[in-house]
Length: 197
Image (cartoon, rainbow, N blue to C red):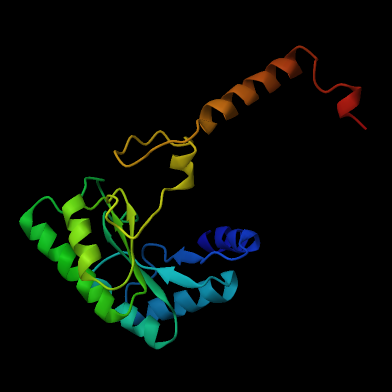
């Protein structure tokens, strides 16, 4: 499914960097990760892949990079495996692990790191510490860049996470359009001759 979605994305991209998430469970070890990453890159023509995790994925990242596969890291909330979406970095021990992991990912060779739902002062510290760009999603303005899932941006999800800001209410517009369509069909206002061959 990820490959098919990504192939569609590739058709629409003219100059943007295209990074494809390695699906959860497709990078349990370096050999499996390499095989699956090669397939994703071959079939989607993406520019890089993204892995979630810190210390546990360092050897996998090194293997991919050794094989000329660019990798983006991802720390904080790991949405593919998270059981809850509570922000990360409030407790001292957790802060130390995330900071350590950001350095390990950089040393392994990632070209950037997504920080998802990471406490603001920790995101600031990581951004100052590592030399690769940080991309925030609910991790404050201290990151080098920002991302917001399109469905959240356009108001299609009902997610009430603190970092979500809807710039539109597409869900309401879709619902209104569907109800108008239904009404026009029921009252025989659609289709008319104008809308028929």
